[in-house]
Image (tube, rainbow, N blue to C red; front, side, top):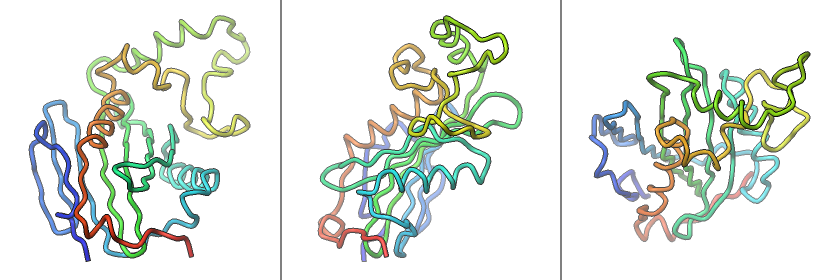
Length: 209
């Protein structure tokens, strides 16, 4: 059975703060957190990774139940391994947003999850405000946010917390310090440096029950 040491990636910009058999936690100088999780059990995913719509519905429902919102869910190949890439958003207790991004690698009898947790700090809401004033040219006085909040995969949804137009990846380069930009950047860096042992590479792939 592979273990938590069977996965590695570049952590040179991170300081380790906890190491357990099934979790390693790091931090950096911007209050962000990085973690690697190993789950030695069959993943609880209800569908195969090829059923992307059902998979997105599954993650959307899970994050809504804990008070968050869906930014994106995608399936991709990282170093030849199938992965689920997710980005969620949560309101912070004081002000601002927290973004949690993950790369999940499910196998038949175990899985790995690499997570980044990025809170908003300093003056919050700048990205939202600047993009809003740029893209919302015709504002409905009866509904000034009409078209601003949209589920990325189902425009008919009206959830309590939803992705807004400023959270599109095309704006990341303009707001490099924003927590969502940081989360996407960290995940991209991890994807490039990620390595698996042969034991993981040869493991049986995940198949939904």
